[in-house]
Length: 364
Image (cartoon, rainbow, N blue to C red; front, side):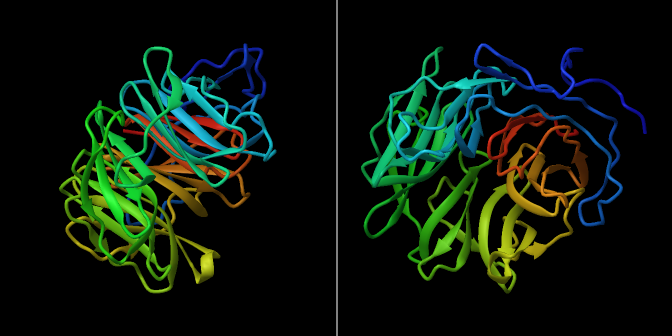
């Protein structure tokens, strides 16, 4: 196998792929020729399919969540190292993750961003300021964030967008979790059905289409739980987890029904990657793809899924599943584990480490 082409130009002056200009983060990387193997076999021989960018020069905190819309906007957030910081850790991109800047937003001292979801021209950010819930929404060509009203059903706990304007969220009240939907990218919300009474908390939500979504969280007893819906949250069905699974971090399903779940067992010490389908409620363990040792996040778009986490050296690692084949995503700069990932399209994704933003180009 031989290198085929560069995915993004690497300037000759950049020996470490680290470029900071005018407060923005410029993402660069390379694409190498790819080999593949089937989704259920050992993946040690997989070849590289993409590249990576550089660390953020302006963050004083940890990134924990990222979302990219179907056009070119992305946003990522987390929490500051300093609890008394005058602004939260919130960055955005308007060119599909090529460059990043600090988001234009109201100052929220001590804010912690826990979730984000982007539609075509607007992003939603969920978090807290102290003990108070925080919901921000960006709109317009300048992508400026402003405070947004919570759904009447409760406080948004998790949210996901699919398509140009459709978003689905889980609103929490004192006694129930309720599906809420929006057809204007979170400007207003409609109240839908409640989740099963067994549901305790939704930690992550992913929607492949406006109708098809999967949630990862815990039930009323604190046990790991994965729920799927195929009717925009009208009904939620649990997927059966293998024994000894103690937590689920994220879950995502791709077109055609294949679902991947990032999980832990043995009290959270042993990482697992699970696979199943919407029609078959039983999830089963599959081998770790490529160089991944501990997966932390997964996203799916169309027929492609991307899994990110850490490798044997505790640095970032990533692999993609296209149809029935896994591909390594080669990382040239990922000093820490990748904790979240999102895509604008099947060949354009962005992932985050604690203080770095990585652009990925999965194989097709």
